[in-house]
Image 1: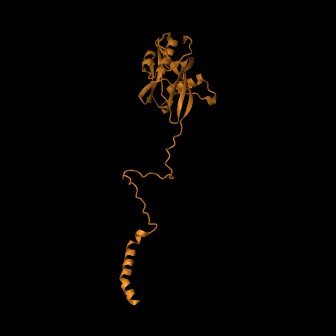
Image 2 (image 1 turned 180 degrees about the horizontal axis):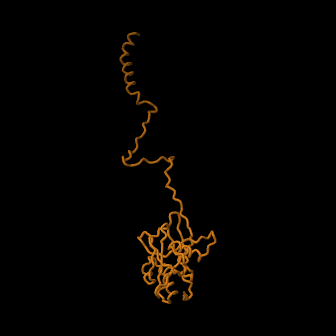
Length: 229
């Protein structure tokens, strides 16, 4: 019996070495290594996780609409048989421009249009001697302010004065106040709407018609009455 065991010893040792060599291949559930997947480009941002919250665009508040009511006037002065009109120079995005005096109607205090026009012309042009005569027309325009789209309506009146001195209201951004012969005022004014108002005033003062259709001002539709000074 001891002799038989000695003969089988090399075979037994060989089988043991063979089993140890191939044991990993016979593992019933070999571990799986994770797939590396495609490598992102160095300059490419990684894809966000489905559970990751994407940044939201910045909220832009909606701009509203604001309506404004203003009143102004054509201050006229007669000198040596010729009519002069007071114009104001102000700064605009296009540069320095000549305009008619005008401003807000103080509705909270019960101010009417004619009173507001007289007050604004007096304040902006430095005129204290003013007599309100005819209503000349209405202009309407809109512009984009910082917080809203503004729709403005302006009522204009003809005013007569004997005062020669003009003083611009500097705190309102007015650079200069000057008397213009009424025909020259039509050329100096920067805006068509202001030109239409002065043309209407000239018709009232002298009976001289321009012969052009109003482009921005809306007259009353009645013939312009002459006034007596």
